[in-house]
Length: 274
Image 1 (cartoon, rainbow, N blue to C red):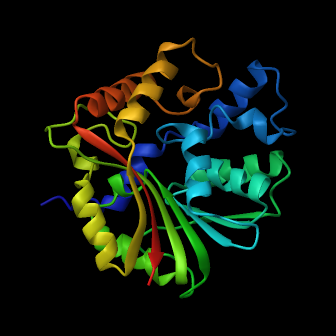
Image 2 (cartoon, rainbow, N blue to C red; image 1 turned 45 degrees about the horizontal axis):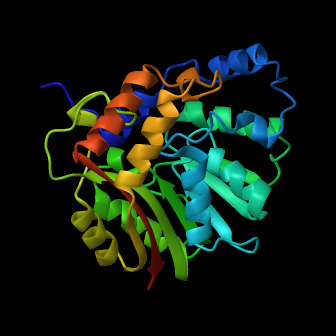
């Protein structure tokens, strides 16, 4: 029998193209930017790999009341967009972790290019096995990550372990809607084997069982779907996520359709570590 790949390995393969840095470098040059000397605003259109992009991250940071004194873990940092926003706008010290080596290398390059390399540390790590001491952080931010993680209990147990009591877990997540099945491909998966959606109720249950208390829980499906539909119906930005995400137009269209058809629900939440 052929050994089956671990879920984490499968997720990494989904995001690895071998072309992420090269594609972003080329797109920046074509847009008249110097890829070695950038400002954070230059990257805003392409660095937030989740629904509603930069707007969602800003709202989540505000909801979680992240301040300059906080030690922040961006769990599933991708190419580092949220980590750079936190370092530049909030002024906090950030560690970003991601399983995909290609994304970690790209994040480090972009951090240096915008002058934030000293304020952000990037580590390649599995969010279900974090290489940090107990209570190492005040805030864990997780945006559109758990959909690739089958073992939710382990994921949120690790988030709780690395947070100080009273620390905040800030979530922006896609969950399962009442209508099945979802349409593929979507940004986090090309087929059902790579997707591990649970219902909002199940997400709330697994996080509270891990030692969290819910302080904010907002279903933003309708608002997000409407905003994303308007965004993608407008003329495309040449520096969008399509630069490094294969077949992004189809994946985004399916995500919007899934939200509009109640096949997925988009949940924003903040939880306190007990």
